Length: 250
Image (cartoon, rainbow, N blue to C red; front, top):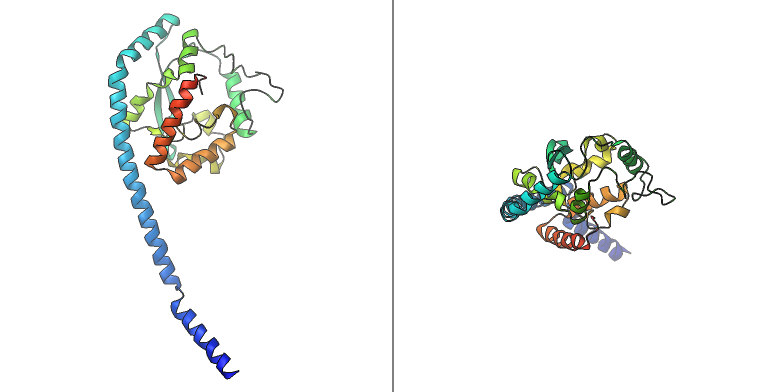
């Protein structure tokens, strides 16, 4: 009995001596946080440089194509070929997003706003109603011009956003920037998707986005923010090329 008691005392003494105390745990956690912040900072610096370089090259190479697209828009319908739209970006900051105009000017957004309310507040899935009806007229959208339909199908309407990337408002990969009307319906947890610079493409865009609910979209954005890395960005960009080649405007 005495020997057993001595063994137990020695075990307790050893456990006490080797167990990390609260100060050690705090130091370890602080060290891990510093490493994580350092990795994130390095990643963001590299990403920002790569974003601007690729955006500059794309704008230089595709500038003749963009001029032809602008000319086609003017021939198809009256109005400026370039759409300037207010969006919400990183940390809730507003900026002007550029796109090629694919809709008639002075179009009615009433049904689209009803769709956004259904999508965000009721977490609806897809662009059709529960009965499979195009009640919001998003499949056969009367707001979209003939040439605009082609631009949307090929994603060429997004090309001017490389200007936003060059300016630093956007990145090649990240959560999509949303319009103020949609953001006004966000709950607190949804604002976390603005912790990263908005992107031209992202995890949501390459995941059958027409079938993704709003909550699923936010979840995918937060997953990207949690795991963001150059390797993940490259993977998403490659998947984006595959999505564009499908030619369904996804």
